[in-house]
Length: 545
Ligand code: GLN
Image (tube, rainbow, N blue to C red; front, side, top):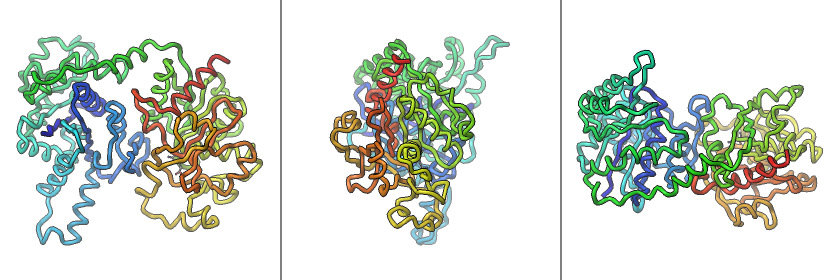
C-alpha cells in the first residue's frame, strides 16, 4: 500500500520546504522504506527551462531529460533516488495537456473547468505509478497557502485526503515562528493564521513543522496545538542548523518521522532509523582536515541558487577528501574588460567555470581559464565553462586566433556551434529557424566513451559513462585534430565519435572540461568522481601555495 505525504508551506516563502521534504524522505528511507518525492509547481511556465536563473535559480535536469525545479536536486541528494520527468508538474503543463485534448475533441462537448478537469489532472500526477518498492510518495506543493495560482493544487490534495483517508494521506504544513527581540518572545500568530487559511480551503494539517531560530517553549507548543487543532506531539520544532545535511538527524530528534508513522498507525511496527551515514557526513562536515578555496567564476554569482548543484557537488568533493571547501563566488563579467587584473584569483586552490548562456561574462570566463591554464591552477570547466575553455585554448595554444562560439559571434572560426551548423558547413540560418525556446536543447543522460590512458578514464574507473546534458551548442569536431596537435586531449566522445564530450590538458596538474553537468549526479554519499578528483587536486595545490 502506497501512502502519501503532502507538504505545504505558509507564512513566507523560502522556509526550505524542499529541504524539509527531502529530509523527511531521507528519514523514512533510513527506516527501510522506499520513497519517491514529487514537486507540484503552481506557476504558469511549462517548465523552468526558459526562466532566468535570477528568477528561479538552477534548472535541475533529470536523466530522462526533463528541466525541473531545483528542489528535485535536493530530493536526489538526500535520498539517492533519481528523479524522473514524472516527478515535477506545473500549471503550464497541466493546461497545455488539457487544451490539447480539448482541441482534439476528446472531451466530447463538455465544458472544461478547473474543478474537475484541472484538479483531476493534478490528482493523476500525484497518483501516477511511483515505480517498484515505493512505500511513501512525498508531494511538495510550491508556493505558500493563499496564493491564487496554488488553489487548484490545494483543492486537488484536499480531495485526495478524502479519497485516500487518513490511513493513506497525511498533511504536513511548514510554518515560521518568528522571534521578536523587542518583545523577547516567539510569535505563534503567523502560524495560526496560516493554518486558518489552510482550513478555510478544507485542509486540516496533521503535523506542523515550525521553522525557528531557538527552542520552542512547551507553553507555545501547547498553544499552537490547541489553536491549530493538532496534537501537541505534532508540533515539531524545525530549528536552524549549521548545515543542510544536519537536518534529517535534527528532525528525527524532534520526532518528525515517529509522528508521521504514528499518524499512519505504523509507529510501533516501524523499524528504528539507521542514521549512521548522516552521522558520518555530519562528522566530516563539522571536523574537516583543513580547507581549500575554490573560485567559482560565473555570471550569476549574485544569486547563489543559480549554482546550487555545483556548490553542493564541490562540498561533496570536500567530503570525499575530508576537507572543507570555501567557495568564493566571483563575477565573471568584471573580467570581460581586458584591463581588469585577475588578482582575485591569486591564491585560490582551484577554479570552477560553471554553465551559462550568452555573451556577458563569457570573455571573463575565458580569461579565468587562461589564468588557470598558464598558472597551472586546477580548473574544471562545465558545459559553457568547457566550451569557453576550448575556445581559449584554441586561440592561445593552437593559434586559431579567431576561434569563437556562434552563440554570440557570427564571424570567425566556429569552434563551438550548433551541431547542424558544423556538420552542414556552418549554415547560420538554422539558428534562427528555432522559434520554440522550450526543450530545444540536448537534454538528459547521454553516453560518452572514455579514452584509454586518459585522466578521466582513471577518475571514473570505467570506459563508458552516462551524464546529464543541457545545452544547444557543441564543440565543433572538425577542429579536434588541430587542437590535439596543439596539446589538448579530447578524452571523452559520444559513442558515434561525433560529439566531443570531455577534454583535458595533459601536463597540467588538473584541467578538465566536460560538455555535461556532472554536478547533477553528485550526492553526499557518492561524491561525483570528477568533483572528488578536482578537490583532491585543489588539496595538492593548497600545499604548494
Ligand atoms: N550556452 C551553452 C549552450 O547552450 C552552454 C549551456 C550550459 O552551460 N548549460 O550550449
